[in-house]
Amino acid sequence: MQLRSITWSNLLIPSRNPLLSLYTCKRHFSSSCLLSDKPLPPRLKIEDADLTISYLKGTGPGGQKINKTNSAVQLIHKPTGIVVKSQATRSRSQNEKIARHLLADKVEQLLKGDESRVSIKAERERKKKASRVKKSRRKYRDLEKGEETSENVENAENAGSRDNNKDDV
Image (tube, rainbow, N blue to C red; front, top):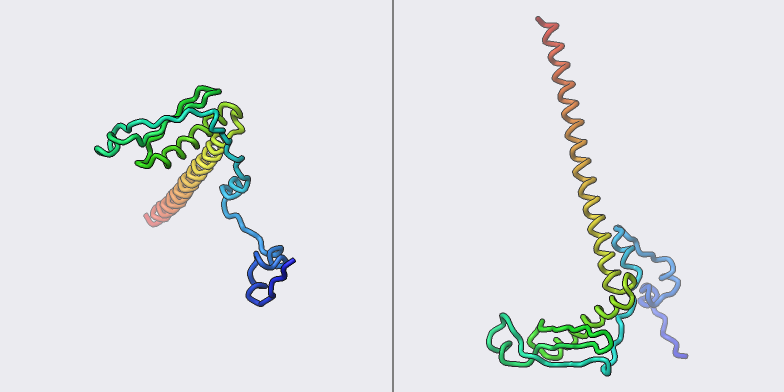
């Protein structure tokens, strides 16, 4: 067992001082932090034996370099028959990595359904959007209430000044 030297600088850093790390706490100012505390499940591992990899010529914008080289990647998952093609970059290795991620997400979506990474991410985004919409509605509702109360106060003041004018006549 290796002992670390104890210095004042080490004692003031929460990660190096277990007592200090007990007393420091994280503050969450929004509900979105609480949603992201639960980690996503690990991405599905696909074996190379289950894949057919082919390199294709790219199409679309990107110039002559894209159209002449075999940098686009097409992966076919043999057990499910899912086909994924990636042409995001000019690099063959990066396109293959992107295609593997896309294929893993699609296979996992097929196998796990609502418990897959993609579904969990989509649900989080849906909740964030609903929270933003709710906050916006609440804001404008409060603004309308504020305008109504100010109009009521102005109407009451105008009515009071009209009564005073009648007394003067």
